Length: 178
Image: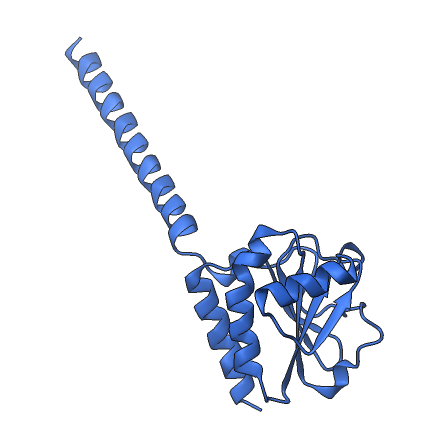
């Protein structure tokens, strides 16, 4: 009888310990996911590094070793929220021949022009195109393409502050290593 009671006590203690450890691990995972975002969490699913970018045949990617394609929807609240970050990218790359920045919209041309003027967002080239045909399934999306149209990286969604800093550090390093 005493042995059974001891066994039950040990069993209950072990189950409680498992619950506490499991809950702690889940809490840690949730914390790292929500409060420690990385660029990897924004990698686009359809646009894989190494794939050829097949869109915008009229644009000559060979004029620069780096082109940033920014897919935006004029009706997207996240795109509006991302404009200050996109302006930083343009500012960092201004006057640097190693990078070109393109804004791609699926909206009508007049909606695109209104959006850009309303937000004071100036880029070298504006393309009105079918984003789904380019395998862009969310806006905003940044696609980093080299001179041979090879996708170097692709990120979708709104960057958090830490993700912006990570991207800018990579971007600045790339620009300074001409």
